Amino acid sequence: MQAKTNEQYWRDRYGMPPRVEERVISRSNPSPRRRRRGLAALLKHRPHRLFPHITPKKARFAFSSLLKVTALIVFSVWVAGSNSLLHPASEFVARPGGEAAINADKSVDDMDARLTKLAAAQETSLVALRGYLLTGSPGFKTEWAQAVAVGDAAQAAIDRDSKSWTDGQKLLQLSEMRKTTLALRNEERMLIGIIATPNQYPGLRLYREDVDPALMQALALLNELLQSTLTASGAPAAGHVGTLAEMRGNVRDLRQRLLTYLPSGDTMPPATLRASLDAFRKAPEMLGALRAEVTGQDRDRLTTLVALIRKSDGRLQQIFALKRSPRWDYADYAFKQKVLPLTEKILNTVEEWRTAG
Image 1 (cartoon, rainbow, N blue to C red):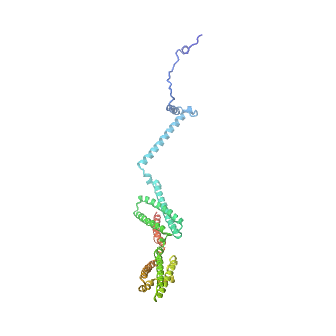
Image 2 (cartoon, one colour; image 1 turned 90 degrees about the vertical axis):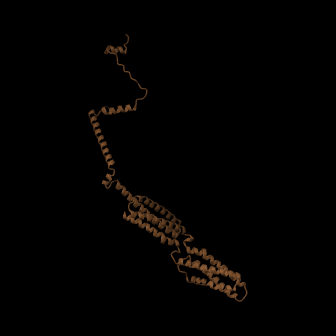
Image 3 (tube, one colour; image 1 turned 135 degrees about the vertical axis):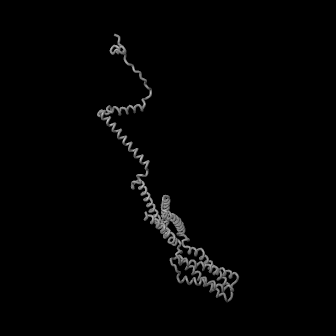
């Protein structure tokens, strides 16, 4: 028996040919967008197929509740955003503890921190500078330089903050502080430059560079005059030799006593030094009596010697005046009379600001 075809089977049983569906099969992969739509529809309309224990009624209730909650949240966010746009500063005015107050407190804290840092840096630089003055140790000089850098940075930060100040008196004080700081830095650098150098003691430097060479030249001239007098003939020669020899001894003693006294901490010269100074000042008068009895070359030597003695005497009077004054140690004088008052002026302004808040 011939086997029935598929079409005949359907005609004999159902009285109609089989339905043939024609589908166009795409060669590409299904679109991810269609997959997502199918999954969204499944979650929305038939969640019970994914979660059998959830009935369609419960799913619809849950879905409607989710929509209501979502709408409420969106509405609340919109209202809050609208209020903040319409009244951006209202919450800061209404609430003393708001962001504006927090920023103000932070500004006050920053200002107080900068003032504290500035005061500490000024005190540290002052102590370090005094230590360098007393010891000459380079470590103190390094510490001073570091403290100055910190203090200048703190003051620069205060200068930047001052652009928002409204207190005129405070702005004037800040301007005066800038001038004081500039003067202080100049004095400090000058002081650093002369510590442990000949410039620290200007009177001692004047003696070593001017008076002592003159005394050495005077001794050389006295030696030449003595040699010339000893080789000369005649009765007056013996008296001249005694005068010149005594004067030479006095100049030599004066030089040695000055070299002992000037570097010392004594302000008043000892009695032996004062006696040598008196004899030294009388030397030009004694040498003048010899001018008429010496030769032409010795007369020139006497003229030069008298000029040296008078010039040295004037320099010695300046040196002794400095020795009795606070300016003898000029580094110590500059520290006490200039650096210290300027630093105290800055610290007083800082303390006034910190007290005023």
